[in-house]
Length: 312
Image (tube, rainbow, N blue to C red; front, side, top):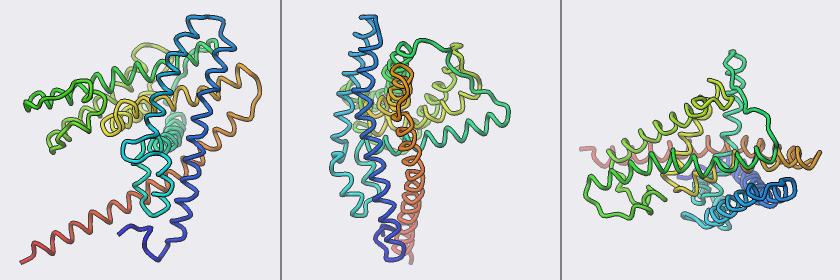
């Protein structure tokens, strides 16, 4: 039984759903706003035509992926609020964008907490060297496509194709690399192997941040590995667009507000974005906790039904 359908505590749960879905939609709205914001900043502040051309190409790719993410994989974004408010907490995971909003906001809070713990223990995180804000923003904007191609598609996706090839299954290489979960049989052995590769890929992703001497230090490995593992799970279940857009949220989305203020001047937008992200993160953590309780309750119920059914 869905916890939201029980009499006791139904009103607080409905309130959590309502506030949470409003925050999620507000965060997605800010993501939409970041598209013209980033484009305006680069086109007006950069004097290099080559940089503008590269950025416009990246911008178009992200825009197309964003539109695609609104349409699935199971629910269109416009149908998510009604489905969630009717009692299906899991409905929020039916759409890529709503899933990313929950995941991204929660990861921001978790990352901040880990960094604070590490800094208090004397474990340095480091930082990237200062450079021109526009160049830095464009550089950050290239990372999601490049790094997801290497660490998710190049490692996890290729292992998924190898699993299919070993079984003698005919498959379209591009389709499997684009969205592994749609083409795997999901046997226990497949899941164990693939999720092991997800952890390996995420760990390599974390180590890569300090391997090339970009300014990051050992503390960056922890948070980057954690995010890399989550990116792997998103890639397997929501495909390449999902992984790219979650990475995009950390780089382009956050950067569009941060660097906009540096280039244009003092603005309330970064503060408002921070507020929405933090509030969405807090409610997302509560939502994930409730959803976890529901899942445990369902599993226990099924196990109990199985035990009764098999009883002599």
